[in-house]
Length: 558
Image (cartoon, rainbow, N blue to C red; front, side, top):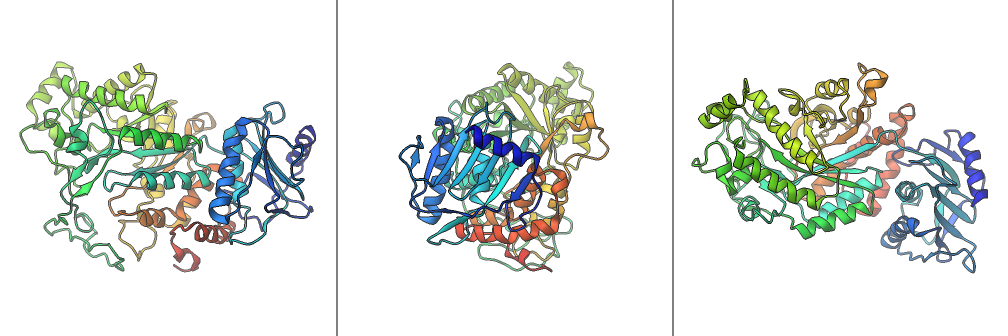
């Protein structure tokens, strides 16, 4: 092991960014092509682990080989008496002293993968997977390379909305695997909204008995300026666009579903083995029609006949805000307690976005409450609401994340800001030394169409691959000290027009590849033409794995 460590140190000091035929995404920090003969994986190859800490990474690699190449390799804990051809998975803090790095060396008869932690070893496995050929052959040739690699940002996230359309556990697990392949480490699970409540809460069973189901879904794009004249090719299961001046029509098909707490635990365990933290989101004070359909007494108009929303958008049209009463806060605290007991994550997302103040303004009881608490306007009430929830979450040892509207009326003192309305909110938070996740809608909303003449129904905004790749999460106007508060960035996938797993993949890939390189690779390594070159190999890997992606990117003029 000491000899291996010494070789790695030599590599770290003498690397150069060559090996153009190596097509890993996200691009490693340092990579060097060596002159050793290539390594061939076959039935005689063994997987050696230095300790039980390395087993998870080795098992993941072994399972990948078996699933896609029908090659079953054994995992061993001793180098004695085994094949001379080995892939070694080593975790050792004494040898690999620098945290958040992995080292990969491919020699003729040995592949050495080492790090100081199981997490970083797992990231090294993702690079090793991308060195495998993209066709099933009798020989699996691994090119001889040396890699020293580490992430740029600590937060590398993707979001999935399961409220507009529900996706089963198997689909969510696949999504997590996609994140793992791209070395992402946070999964933001959008579990509640106007259109469905997706998590079992034992104290309030009607949340899933009632709130998890709607009686139909809007046909086409929601009415809005600019939507009426869109033309696109209709794919199977797509629907036509609703003109801005048309009566809203729904398909009348009951839609819904939810995750039991046992299923939630299973998904959390699955993600943990891939070193991905799941951040649950429970929306408040708005986007709460599904909850209010189940428990109308927590709304500002309990007799109005709340129901689970069937159309997207139009927040001002529907009363979807919680009433800021003591019984409402007790309800939310009960819900959050069950959520926090389920999820080990330090962070709980509480939404906080798009709360239409008109419903609080119209409600006499809310106005009386504001006077009693010396709240000058509804923005101050929004701040009061978020601050109160934050104090409760903090009392449980957790931290809240909220969309940048939580800045309205004054930011909660310990909150993390997720900046989606551009970068303004994130900049403001960073300047007062609060942690920020950048996810501006115009740059990182992957539910937006990929082409001006898109070949599938999508939100009516344009987000091409190059725009994603060229995004820089740290705003230029922040100084070096302020920039430290940019924790990372996240891509969001809202599911209004995503009703099946294949459409998830189509909207993700290859734009999530671009996002992964933004978040992992050193800023100075970014090179869009080189990324496109490597992407061709990635597409072949997706073909092998049976992943749907937008093949129009293979066309230089899509």
